[in-house]
Amino acid sequence: MARPGRPPMAKPKLHPLVDSFLDMLTSERGAATNTRHAYWRDLADVSQYLRSRRSTDIDKANTDDLKAYLKDLSEKTHTKGSHSAQIAVRTVARRLSALRQFYRYLVSEDIRKDDPTSTIDSPKQGRTLPKTLSESEVTALIKAAASGGGNDSVRLVCLLEMLYATGLRVSELVGLPLSALGDGNQFLMVSGKSGRERMVPLSEPARTALVSYLDVRTSFIGTEDKGRQTKWLFPSRTSDSGHLTRQRFAQLLKDLARAADIDSDRVSPHILRHAFATHLLSRGADLRSVQKMLGHADIATTQIYTHIVGEGLRKAVEEKHPLAKTGTGK
Image 1 (tube, rainbow, N blue to C red):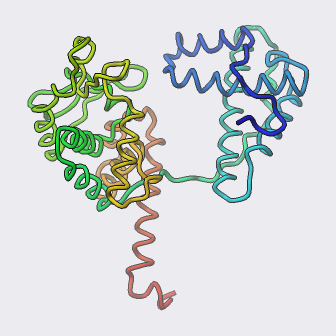
Image 2 (image 1 turned 90 degrees about the vertical axis):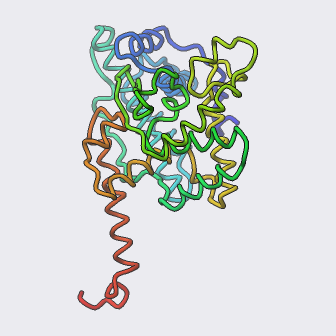
Image 3 (image 1 turned 135 degrees about the vertical axis):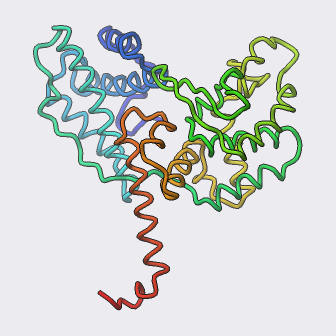
C-alpha cells in the first residue's frame, strides 16, 4: 500500500549516478546483495520524493531539499507510541546514512563540490537492546522440535542446536557447505561477511544433533539436479539455491514457537543469535571470544549484549533481593 500523499514507488528508474554508486559498493567495498538492495531502496525513495515534491533529482538536491524529505519521512512514519517512534527515528537515521554515503561518493569523484548532508544532524536514537530469549525458552523450543518425530524433526533440532551453539547469522547457517564441518564435527569453518573466515566450535548437544541429522540428510535431496543440492549441509529439493532458505527456516521457527507456547513475534533466527551471545556473557564468557564467534568486525557491536546482561541482573535484584521491595537500606 502506498504511503498517503505519495505516488506509489513502483521500481522507479534511478539516476545513473546512483547505479554507479551501487556498483562501487559491490566492487570496491564487497557489499552483499542484501546491502546493495537496501541502499537502492533508500535512495529510490529519496529520488521519488525529490522528483515529485521538489522538482529536482538526487544528484542536484541541496540541503533544504534533503531536510524537507527527512521531515516528511519522519511525519509519515512517526505514529503514536514509543515503539513506532523508535522505528521512525531509525528509518530517518538509515536514510540519512545512505544519503551521506552517496554524496561523499559524488564528492570523491569530483561530480559535486559540496556535500549537502554535511550540516544535517542525525536524529537522536535511544539505545534499544536486542530482543532475546531466556535459557528455559530456548530449551522449550528444542524440546518442541524433538517431539515432532520424523526426519523433519531431526533436522529442525539440529538447526536449533547449531544456531544456539554458534550464534551464526541465519544466512551463514542455512548456506553452510558440507565441507564446512571440521575434523570429528568439533567445529565449523564459516565464511562470513566480506569473505572473512572464522572457526566456530560446536557444543556437545550440537554435535549429537548433527550426527543424528547426518544419518537422515540424504532424505532432503531430490532425484533431480542432485549436484546442486548435495554440496550443502542443509540441502533442499525445492529451493533455487539448492539449500534450505532463511525464509523457510524463519517460518519453521514461528510454527515451533506456537507449539512451545511462546509468542511467535519473539522468536526468529536472529533472536536466537542474540540469545547465544547473551547467555554466554551471562555465564562469564570473554567478550573478545564472543565477538570472534559472532563474526563482528568491531567489538563495540558485541558490547551491546553486556547491557542486556546488566539489565537482567538489575531486574533479578529488584525481584529477588529481600530488601528491594521494602525499600530498606536506601
